[in-house]
Every structure is written in C-alpha cells, then in structure tokens.
Length: 598
Image (tube, rainbow, N blue to C red; front, side, top):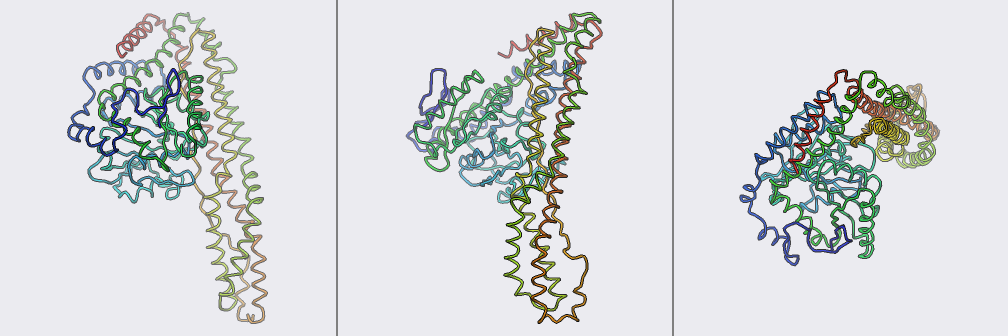
C-alpha cells in the first residue's frame, strides 16, 4: 500500500498524484519496458535549460550577485554559486536520499538498483557522499579533496565510502561517482546517498547539510522504528528552501502492521501540517517483505522525473532562484529602512539593533566559555568510562589469553621475555584499536554537549538579532539556516608502551628456567593490570586531544557565522550615502523579476 498526506486526509492509493502511472497489476519489468521511453528517446527528451528560462534566471542571478557584493551580503554566497552552477553546467537532477543515520538509505538504494553496490551494516556506514547515475561501462570514480581522481571497480567502492574501510574519511575522499547500467531508465537523474544526519558529525567537506543547496529532489528516509524526530522536521524545513520536490519515505515498514502504518502516516500528516503548514507525499518501503510492490511507487516517481527532466529541472531551478531572491529582498529591506534615516538616526538604529546583547565580543566570550568548560571535562569522562567499563574485563581477558598461549612458548628467559613483549605489543595494539573503533561514541559526550550548547547560543544570537531588526525597522528577516556541523575526530594511532624499565633477562644464562619459569610466568601475569591501566590512560589522552581540537573547530565555525552576519548587518546600517531611491529601484527590479518566474 502507499499513503499520501493531502489536505483532506490520509489516502491509500496505487498511484502518485500527477505522475504517469502504469497499471499496478503489471510487473516491474513490464512497466519499464513497455511504458518507458527507449533510451534514445529518453535522451532526446533530456533537453538543456530552455532559452526563456535561461534568459529569465541569468539576469536575476546577476542582479542578486551584484546586490550581495555591493552590500556585502556574505550569507547568500553558497546559494548563488549553486544556482549559477545549475545554469552553467545544466547537470543531472540530483535525487538526494537524506535522513538520520540508520534510516535505511543505503539499503533502499541497493534495493532500487537491484544489486548490492553500497555497503550496509549494523553501525553507521556511509562516510562520504556517493552519487549513482547511468553509465554503459560500470565503474566508479573517486574524487579526493585535493582534486585528484581515481578510477576503481565496483567491488572497491566500499574501501572509500564505508566507515569500516575508510574510518572518519582518513583517505580524504570528497565524493564517489558510480555509473551503473541498471539506471538506464533513470537517465538524466543522479541518485545521491548521503552520510546520516542523526549524529552531529560530518566526515567530509561536502557533508549532507552543506550539500543541501545542490538538491534537485529530496527523498527523506525516516525509519518506522523512530518516526519523525525534531531533526527530521528541521531537515524537511531546510529542504523546502532549496527544492519544491520533497518526498517522505517511511522505511522498514515491515516492522509495522497495516493499522500501525496508517497511524504513523496520520502522525506525519498532522505534525507536518502543524509545524510546516505543508502537505508532503509519503511513500512506504521495505527491503524485507513486499519489496517489489513498494518499489513500483518509487519507480513511478523516478521515471516521471526522468521523462520530464527538462521541465522538472527548470521548475527546480526556478524554485531555488525564487528562494534566493526572497532572501536578498529581505536584506534590501533593511538597507532601505536605514537609508531613509539621516546619519545621526542611522547611528541610533545601529546601536538599537546591535545592542549589548547582539555583540561579537559577547558571543565570542560565551562560545569560548562553553568550549573551555567542556574541554576540561573530556579527559575525565573518557578515563572514567574506560576504567569503569573496560579495565577489569580487559585485564581478565588478557590473563586468560596469556594463560592459554604462554605454555607454548619455548626457550630461555631472554627468548621468553622477547616473546612476552611481542605478545603484549600485538595484543594491546589490537585491543586498543578495537576499543577505539567500537567504543569511540562513548568518548564524544563533551563534543556533543559543546556542539548542542554552541548551536543553541548561535541560534539565540541570531534570534535576538532578528528580533531587534523587526522591532527597530519593522522588518521580519528571511530565515537563513546556520548549521553548525562537526567533523568527527580521527581515530588515534595506538602506540605500544614497553612493560619493563630494565632488562633482567640479559642474565638469562644464570637463570635455570626449569626452576624459575613458573615464577616468571606469574610475574608476567601480575604486570597485566598496570599495563592495561597505562594503555587505557594513553588512549584517553589521545582521544582527549582530538576531541578538544574538534570542539575548538566547532567554536570557530559558529563564530564565523556570527562574524559574517554582523558584518553584513553593519555594512547595511553604516551606509553613509542616502541611497533610498537606488535601493528602492533595486527592490522593485528584483520583485519584478521574481514575479516573472511564477
């Protein structure tokens, strides 16, 4: 079954409203082959941006860019570049699969493709943005952060995009592009798998949230076992700024009964209507049961988008440009109001808007205090966790392993000691590395707290600034999201610490092992608790260094938001030349252009 949220309720349907729909009783292959355009016909239908749209949007973007440069509106730079790239390159339509981590995004894409291409697992897997499109010759291209590119086979993709093979993106991959022959009927589209948004972490400069301006169509995956969180609502709200096409995908519906599915969809409907005042189509999906049934609805959606690629692309571009124009007009309104005032009045307005609560030094001090307080707790929390949870079990585990292996070691005291040291090096390196990779999320408490506190402070700062602008100028500023993101710390290198301060084993020729071997075996076992303690302490220090560095990076990122926004507002409020007529003309010109895009 497939449900849609509409203005008059929740409906079970066999078709997507407004889309070309094949007969539901026919097989998926029949749908593709008899109702689809042939690849050649499909390519003919994938046209470039029409001249009327190009002639309409280029002047708008040019005007917006000139206005942004003139008034130093730095907040819109990314959106401007995104729209210009769309016009200049006329790229594929990016269909982004977004959502919280473990929402089933990669599993969903593998199911749609019909083969296992993307890695899936019990822990968050996807490390970098991965894009899939049609290609006659199957393969993948890895683009690194330094712009190097490498051609790889499909069976090598996991080495670059999975957390297990590329932890914390230590290989510095920017994006992986995969070409598949199975996607020939989606030609003109590019399916995009993104790292999960459920944790606050990013692994790449092109993280999911930073990549939102590039979205053509968004499929927001929401797992049936944790439906519609606050983060989902924020993501959907952000997406509506960048694309007119947002579809909700309820995954893992096999966990729900038919009645429960209806309840969840009804919950979606009421919540989205209340919070965002919009209706969104909702698709159900499962990779466990009735997959072919659910797949048909997704296929209809993508086939329609592919068939009508030209007009759909223009609609997406028009939406992005209109959103960008509205944000620009919001800033111009501020410039106009301040321009109406004389020099003295402008200074008064500036003081009223940029009051003692909206001050860069104040926000800088506040963020620095948050960072410092959390950094002081990092080592203590990590060490306490390792000591409480892992010290005793690890010591017991090592004693057991040593007791089983040491009887097999042969030779004099010198050989026995060397073997023991090598065993310690191998075993402790393995255990510390395993702890680092499997337990690291327990180390990130202060980073999460710092990120949450810094994000709240930045949002409070932005809200205070907006309220001051509204109070003083009577203008409600356009909402521009400040997404404070975090690069997850890299896993530290595990170094071995020698267990002995001196080598009494050099006197091996004086010590008969047939008499003293048991003594030394007991002595080696007694050393284990101290060795475990030293290594756990070292691991805590290594993670403390990386986490605290990341907290500082988050603080600097947030301060950059505040600094840029204050610089923009200050420039608008400090305009010393009366330009009311010029600004009014710019507003009217942009409004006129905006009306032509409807």
